[in-house]
Image (cartoon, rainbow, N blue to C red; front, side):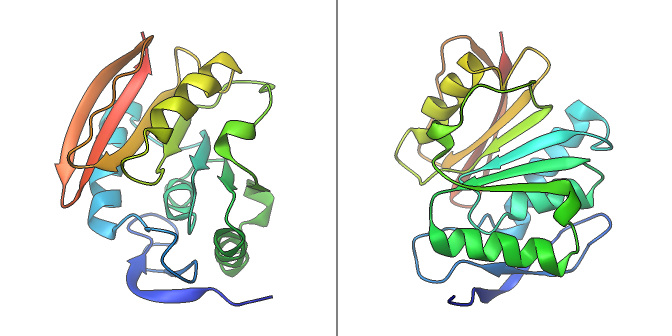
Length: 189
């Protein structure tokens, strides 16, 4: 098994594991969410959620798993990590092992579009697909139809700064630009 790399500066921003370094997938196929972007996203989410305590979350197109691990560090009870890249899955599993968080995580080597019907909706779904693909909106739409997302679920989608998100049945609650990224917070209408 090939090891994951550690990129300088990719760390947990806040909570139980604040400052802990994260492994990232080798190669250029994955674009980890920068610390500043994650900090902005979690500030936007905290103002809506109040607290992450006890939440059930998903990190889709997970890459290093930084978004889901950030939510767990801030008190989320459980996170589903989904990515189809083998190097990303190795990095996610390595990060979970380093943080001793195995009992709070479910890692699936699959496409976010291949998830079946949910047993129950999640509290927060975070999507960070490749830029300029529209995959975040496609996945959110399908996940809502499969029961992963309901009226109480918050959804975040990261896109390139030049991209918008228009999704039938969802209301755009907030948008914020951070560096090259644009963060979108949505809920079912």
